[in-house]
Image (cartoon, rainbow, N blue to C red; front, side, top):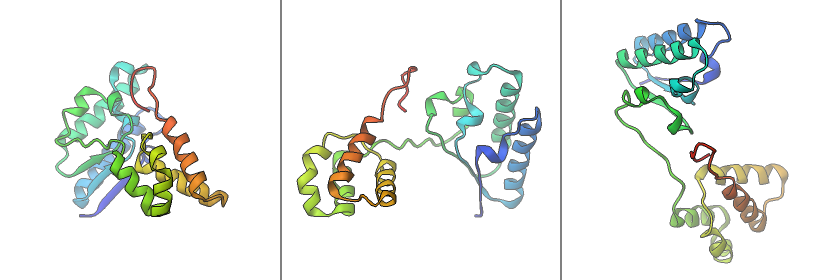
Length: 175
């Protein structure tokens, strides 16, 4: 099936009513093309209506929910803020997948793939103390390549910094 990928910037509009119109258009396009519709950062649209301050925020969410309900196709949505999504939204998704941080064996394997067995043996104990995701490995890898400061020591130091960035928000959600 073809894939239609949309970001919030493709859909959100500063004009009242235009966002709802764009929402309708993307669902119609996906339906007509028999495409998989992938919407990134769905929390931009479907956060809990109890957090809404303006009526247009509620109508935007309502429009999205109505379109999801009547959509006869594949819809995939991504978010880093699952806990903020509207409860009515969650009932409309048949499958929900949560990607958790890597377990220790996955962290060790990924570190070894990037830096080799020798580096793994040297830094294994430090790695076991970290809470990491694949994205954190990617961020550190790209940053060090860009800075041309790539070594096993700088890599582990930067992973340790990234691991400390996993924290709790004031609402109790993992950020």
